[in-house]
Length: 74
Image 1 (cartoon, rainbow, N blue to C red):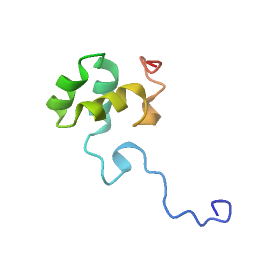
Image 2 (spheres, one colour):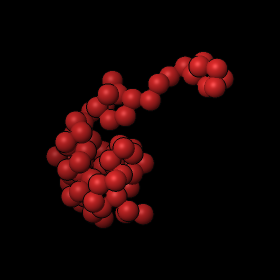
Image 3 (cartoon, rainbow, N blue to C red):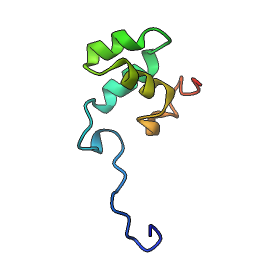
Image 4 (cartoon, one colour):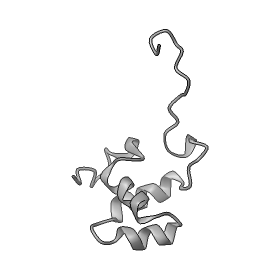
C-alpha cells in the first residue's frame, strides 16, 4: 500500500512530531552526555523517564541524530 501512496502516516522526526517532549537541542545534549548510569539523572533534569533517555542515547529514538559523535554506543 505504501507504493500506491496509501500510507496512513508520515514520518515526523524529532521536534516535527507533535508528541515530542524535547527540543532537538535537548536530545543532542542527552545523546552526547549520557552514559551508563547517568540516564536517570538526565531524564529527571529534562522531565523524561530513564527509559526515554536511554532510547535517545542508544539511537532507538531521535534516530536522525545517530551521526553525531557518540552514536556508536551499542
